[in-house]
Amino acid sequence: MRKRLRGGALAGIFTLGAGLLLAPAAVADTQSSQGCPAEQWYEVTEVGGPRYESIGSPAGKRNASSTSATLRYDMTTTTARASSWHGSGGLSFDWGIVKIEGETGHDVTKTTSTGKTVSNTLNVPGHYYGYTTPKVERRHFDIDKYEETPACKPRHLAKSGWSDAITAYPFFSECVGTSACTPKP
Image 1 (cartoon, rainbow, N blue to C red):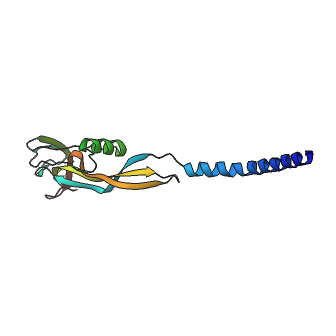
Image 2: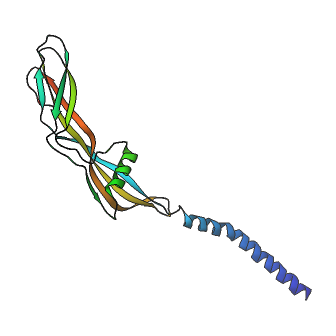
Image 3: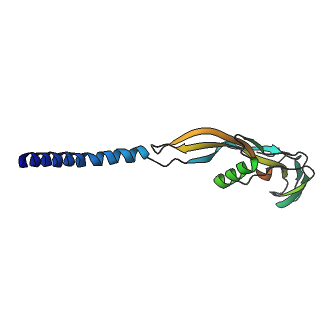
C-alpha cells in the first residue's frame, strides 16, 4: 500500500510540475489576446492647401511720390462666404469646428457678411502702383473615426465628416508693380 501511495504521490508531483511549466505560456497567451484596450477617436486631416476666394473688389492707386509710402485701402465686402460642414451620425458643425481648431490650430469662421468695411495697408515704392483685394482663406479638412485593434494598431472605421472651412478672414491679396497689377494669391 505504501508503494502505491508513494507512486501516486510521485505521479502527482510530476503532473503538477509539468502544469507549472505550461502556466507561463498560458499567461503569455492570455495577455497577448487582450492586447490594447478598445478605444475610439477622431482624427482631423487637412487635404490640399489653402484656397482663396474674393469677398470684394480690388482697390489700388499709384504712389505719385518719389519716396515709399504706406497706402491705406478701405474696401466694402460685396460677397458673403460660409464654411461648409458635412457630418454623419449626428455630428454637428460646432463639434467639427472644435475638432478642427483643436487639432490644427486654425481658427474657423462660420460665415462672412456683405457691406462690412475692411482696411489694409500696403507699402508702395515711389512711382509704383499698389493693389489689394479682400478675400477669405479656405481649407478642406476630413474628420475620420478610428479604433484601436487588439493588436495595438489603428483601424479606420468611417469618414465622419468634412469641412471646407474659412480659416482666415479677411485675408488680403496684394501686388505692387510699375503698372496696374492683379493681386495674388
